[in-house]
Length: 155
Image (cartoon, rainbow, N blue to C red; front, side, top):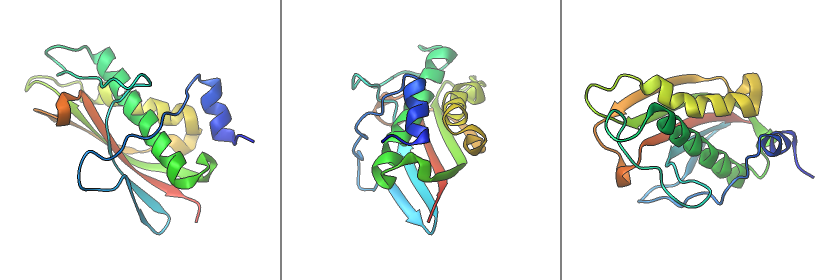
């Protein structure tokens, strides 16, 4: 039987993918007590494609928002794999989002809202978090965004 959060995802039309495997020498989640430190996730879509590009040059803020949302969906998939049940999430504590952008691009917060809005939609008040939205001159594989987070879970 699906939990409350999985029912919410279904209502939103979101199907969790198989979590992407780490692309280097690290693990996807490191647990410290009841806090999960979730590694940076990439914007791999349901079709397996990566959302690539540089904000302020070749993709729009709207496409960047979609990229950050895709990162957040992949984070949810990793959390599901780690916890077995997303209802074990007590709250999203902190999100850090990186935006591949030009030097003069200043709308990083609007882009990373793609992840923040998704967490709030899915978890309600438990999804509202502290956040940093940072511009970067390049990201791995040419991706548009990367998002990591800290999540408090039931012990």
